Length: 275
Image 1 (tube, rainbow, N blue to C red):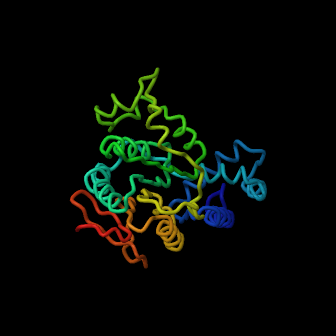
Image 2: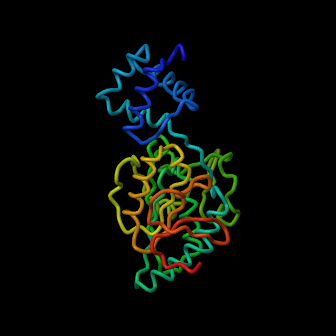
Image 3: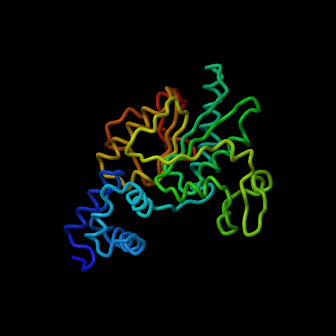
């Protein structure tokens, strides 16, 4: 038992966090919760864990701050090349085919757990690059971290965070600024950042693609099932779901189809895809 965080308060805080967000803290990652609590307490009026626990009740702003601090915002541009290739070489061509059948030319995508925006901007660059000229697209990018969303909205990234961006995209979609690069307005306009807790329904429907990578691993089985069902509800009748390479819907009761492409494995909703 930690001198700082007793078993009793560890259980109280992990229940509070789980009820609020679906994020599950086990005994193995207890130290992460301890370090985040120490940081929050240092920056609050509370002097002890017990005082902070009392403080956070009824204080939605402090609760959001705690949830923000326990989320992991590890990301980069074009992360997981196989997924980006699957989007570029398989999913987008399939969607173009489907949309032409439907006499539509609009594609909508949700980047759930978008962190600081590298994922939705990467998707936007690929779409802008290869979609037919008469097609339009919109990306909703959501996260539990307000700090991360603000970075994404600003669209400025330091030099050290530009690794992985293809040269052809650097010249077309970024403006060089002191100390880094800024996403051009043409791409920024296609991404709408929005605070969202995956424990709740996003309220959007008929999406063509959802990216939710490396988020479900922080949920327990019940929260995972609930989130996946909400993804199903949000997607349109012929659509696609990307989850993290270490995540799987195997063993979960779901109507999603497992789809193996030449580049990566994803999931489809009644997509009528050629396998």
